[in-house]
Image (cartoon, rainbow, N blue to C red):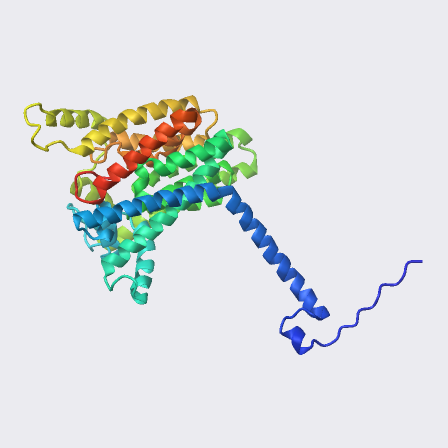
Length: 428
């Protein structure tokens, strides 16, 4: 005969038990789940750290190198450190976070040329630093530091996502090589400057990863956030649309679960719609940002943009005046960037069976914008935004050749960044 279960008498807790020394029955019951919870959290965090510590540490090491170089350059050239890292578009983002938009559309260069997603993240952090007195009482400095922190964190998130994506495409070894290339590529300077790519690139990588894993709502939300950050992210609308169509084609129109994929493209336009609606109410036209870019920065899409770039560069090269500095280095970088992009796209096309359709559509869209832009040619920043094209080198280049490639990338990263931080001769 089975013995009756022992009856446990519940006694009132003593003072020691109530203070949490765990000596009484109730204290033990309360302590065990708490300890188990923390053990679970610890093991989970430990697993994440082991999985991504290489990406995290390598990314942080490259950021430290750029910060040290910027400090040296600021000392040599007698420029404020935060001004260097917020040069070029960073000055506009800082101005937008600090003062906002004008109440009227403009055909000149104003803050209307930039979308509000990134500055909206900068403003509360900058205000917090001002309140804590950590920005020397200067609002522009506070916004610059806030922008740098956000871009730096975004770069870290992007690096982890890049490892996850490329490991899924080509394996763990290629994933690690991709992390090294991603961190050393010259365009990675945007993670050490006040640039919106520090937010847009991790959102794009996260959206692509979510689409690959059929997380339609998450992908749509990430794409919607990205379309409020910068115009290049509008490509994610097409990425989500193509992914949904592929899902419907594979599973069939009669599969109800396949129709959930349409949530991604529907949500992806939310950022664009929100920004356009705000600009309409604020300035009187939803196209205020487009007009500022079109007329203020002379930006437009032209299928012959590379032809014009080559003609302008050829017109500046002359053997009769080597003692003059008339050559626009942005044209030089754009010219060689176009050649490199063509090579990378060929390699990516050869790998189309191993790369997701979402990554291919993203790369194709950004590449199209790069080669048809009259104002911004295929420079390192745009090549970097089309990150699957850069990462494909991790599949094909191995061994000693890979380390030669990494050394060249690291040298270019430091050299071009030195040129970018101060002055207005070379855009990032």
